[in-house]
Structure formats: C-alpha cells, structure tokens
Length: 148
Image 1: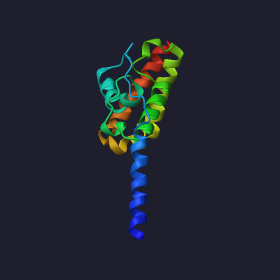
Image 2 (image 1 turned 90 degrees about the vertical axis):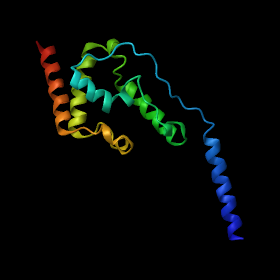
Image 3 (image 1 turned 90 degrees about the horizontal axis):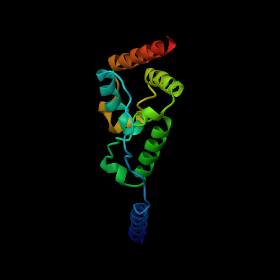
C-alpha cells in the first residue's frame, strides 16, 4: 500500500515536470547595435563577468532549457538587459551612460555584481580585487572625462 502511494506521487511529480517543459521561455540574442567602447582589459572583464545578463550575446547553458530553472534564467537575463545592455550602448543617452558606469563601479565594489546566484554556476565570472580596481578606476576616469 505504501509503495503504491510513492509510485503514484512519483508519477504525478514526473508528469508535472514534463508539463513544465512545454511552457515556452524566451532565449533570444537580439542583434548587437552598438558595443560599449572601453579599454581592452575592461572589455575582457565585462565580457567574462557581465555579458551573459547585460548584453545581447548571452551564452545559454543547457540548464536554461530545463524548467523551472529556465524561467529564472530567462527572467534574470531579461531584467539584466533592461537595466543595462552593453550591446545597445549606442542608443543610451549620455547622462544615463554616466550613471550606469558609476553604478557598475558601485555594484562590483559592494560585491552585488555579478550576482552571487550566478557565481554558483559560473565561478570563473567572480571578480578579483584587481579586476574590481580596474573597473572602478575606469569608471572614475569616465566620470572625470565628462566633467571637463
């Protein structure tokens, strides 16, 4: 009797999991219309640690195709692109660019970016103290350039 209950519960859970896979999730990479212009060492950091969520050049891993994780990944990328998209930098107004660059420095200094959950599956995206310094120095240079 107990075994039959477990089998039914497992069958229901498996059926629910399979049904979840039928819910479509967006995983597109729109065209790049204009990249951010930054020094090579800054670009290398941004591409490695930021571009999956903040560009139209997302690398969609296998788990981005398996619900319910796919829902979270798609939502995170969509929100990340909405907040800051390096692939559409040319269409961002100058004052917003300045605020975004300052925000990048603030977020990496506080350790809020890359997001800790992202780093669980992408430990190579973690920023070293040196990389944080490179990004914050770059942001400071950009701020001074716009003050002149």
